[in-house]
Image (tube, rainbow, N blue to C red; front, side, top):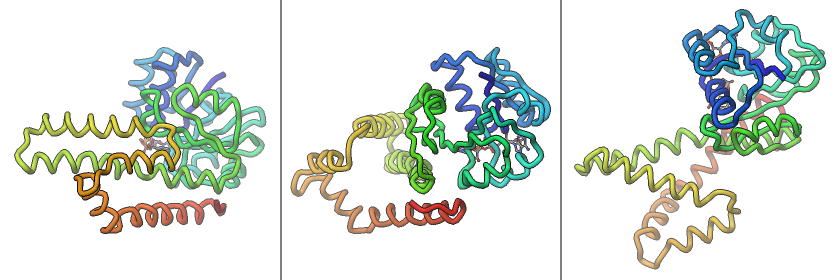
Length: 261
Ligand SMILES: NC(=O)c1ccc[n+]([C@@H]2O[C@H](COP(=O)([O-])OP(=O)(O)OC[C@H]3O[C@@H](n4cnc5c(N)ncnc54)[C@H](OP(=O)(O)O)[C@@H]3O)[C@@H](O)[C@H]2O)c1
């Protein structure tokens, strides 16, 4: 199976490194010659990665085509290409619906959407998929936790939830910088903070909201420091802001894709 990437940007690189690294994917991977430095670096690092000049040739040679250009580049990029009915097209582009993609890649009808997150480079993190497709799940399952839904409205919930990434990193940075602002040596602050967030995040894996709520409750002693901080956050409306922010992103995604959850 030949995997072709239309667009060799940040997320394509993460996916290719994840597949060719620990996941041991050994089939040919074609990348476009755009983003020359990145494409050439990938083909130097992995013998199975070949740089192809011209999107038409890349599509012609690929069994599965990963669409990894920016959302506003998708229509123009796909519009000038010819797809076959025996191919699969998997779009990573945020907010571009299956209906629009299907129109642009006809007569190919096996069209999917995916949201791989950057940590797939290291074989961890979720990959949201729509619709359910066993072979696509198997591919992404090699580099992360593949989670599929058949309903595109539900898929938008993954899209909204994945937008917490920048905020998460920013919080880790803020705690670390706050320590530094109180004269802690930067390396000490960073080692402490990143280890704390990493450990806490790993404890959440696979837990239901009910279990997570009780984990939170177990950290609290009346009058203690965790209780004080949680109360400060909830009283300031931070949880409501989180939910309102997710609602806003969901509305934006739904207005793009025309599907509701
Ligand atoms: N980054 C993430 O965490 C993430 C996660 C999930 C999904 N996504 C989605 O994945 C897509 C790519 O995101 P990204 O962060 O990887 O973006 P990016 O780093 O900006 O990469 C976009 C790539 O598309 C290339 N490109 C643009 N027009 C092209 C064309 N006509 N033919 C071939 N290549 C073309 C660009 O090449 P040049 O550099 O030469 O212009 C660049 O290599 C987006 O639609 C985004 O919504 C991203």
